[in-house]
Structures are given as structure tokens and as C-alpha cells.
Image 1: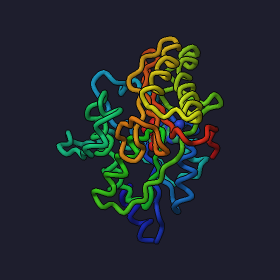
Image 2 (image 1 turned 45 degrees about the vertical axis):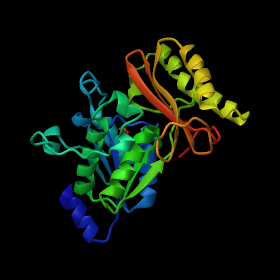
Image 3 (image 1 turned 135 degrees about the vertical axis):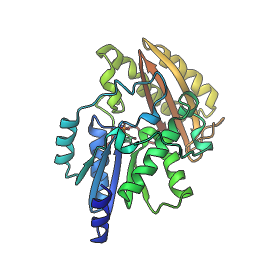
Length: 279
Ligand code: AMP
């Protein structure tokens, strides 16, 4: 991978990297299309990174279908689908971790200790191997995007981090490889996230800007759905992920819930128009 990238860069080509864990859905494909707009060649990495999973998480059952993924990436005109073996990425137990303090600590960082260190470490390795000029990340994982941006700036990588909006299905559910775990009934419950976003935007549109009041209402709405447990439900400043007391035009509603055994996340800027994103 490294030799391929170096040869292309010497020939004057710019590479865009799309890091993924595979089991592609339309969200991943949109990121690939966006990547193609930002550089000459698209590299998609497919690696289910063990060091970003905690004990008891779904590392072993994470959905995989390499054949199908390869076909989809091919159709998108991806130059390389880089799918290293675990032993190739970690020939020995790594003793180095890349930590972005601060931004990694709230939201998903609270219930997934070490998760963002695992993400940053693997993305740092991928940046060094693929040497991209741009890298595309989905704002579905909003905190991840913020953490990667900060890591890239702090470590002086000359890589343009490109954010892609959340891609949703026709019901508004954010696409995720983990949606494949959901039964039909659980899928209906997962729409609690969509409902919460709609209601939050409607309330802020009516001038309600007290975050606690909004969140109390959203909690009731989410709990009306079967089999749903809230992991976090909060309103933060989208620039620094600090919890807000009053909503303003930087406010991001951020949520993680469990539906049955499946953990789902979603987020939305409160002052943006709802609507499906097409790519
Ligand atoms: P994953 O394979 O789930 O690790 O995701 C790989 C990349 O795709 C990450 O940058 C995610 O944020 C992004 N992504 C996943 N789902 C979506 C979605 N529904 N909309 C936009 N980006 C997404």
C-alpha cells in the first residue's frame, strides 16, 4: 500500500482516503463519491480495528462481507480497497497510543473508555501508510470527526479533513453497518432517534432554548419506544463538544441509545433544516 501510494504521489497524483470498517451501505458509498471530488485517486481502507473495541463490545460479531464490499467499491471507481490483516496492522502488541484529550472525554468517551485512542491510533497509522492529501469522515460519528480534526492539526499532518453529512434511509434512520443487527421491531424503536431530532427542531423553532427543558421532553419521547435505553442525550456546542445550558445556532443534539443489544448513535444541528441528504 505504501509503495503504491508513494509511486502515485511521485507521479503528481493526490490521494483521498476513506477509512471504514466495511459492510458498506449508502453512507460509505457517499463518502467515496465525495472523496473522488477532492483528489485524483480514492483509497478506501477496510479494517475492523480491534483496539477501538472495548471488552464485551461487538468486535467478534461485527458484520463482514468482503466480496460484496469489493464489488461496491469497484463500482464507485475506488483505486484501492486496502484491507490489511490484523497481523499486518499490528504485528506485535502496539505500545503506542494516540490520545486526543478533552474532545475524547465526553459523549461516547464516557461509556467507551479507550475507544478514541484506538480510533486515533489506527487512523494515524493509515495516514502514514496511505499519505492522503484529503480524508473523508462522516458526521454521523460527530465526535470522531472532531477528534480526528484535532489530531491532524496537533500533529501537523497536511491532510484536508472533509466532513460528509449523515446519510439516512427513507425513514430518516441514519445508515449504519450495525443496523443489520436490528429486527423489524427494533428498527421501529430505533426511529426514536429520528423523532427526537424532529421534536427538538420543532421546539427550538418555537423559541424554546432551555436545554434541560428540551432534553426532558426528548427523554419522554424516546422512552415511549419499546426496548430502548438511553446511554446519553445531550446538547453540546458543535465547536468544542461542551455541554450547553441554552441552545444557540451552534447547538448539536447528540444521542446514543441501546435498542435491544445494539448501540446506535445519531446527532443533528438544531438549527438546520431536516431533510434527507442525497449524494
Ligand atoms: P464505519 O465503517 O461505520 O466505521 O464508518 C466509516 C465512515 O463512514 C466513518 O467516517 C463514518 O462516520 C461514516 N459513516 C457511517 N455511517 C454514515 C452515515 N449514515 N452517513 C454518513 N457517514 C457515515
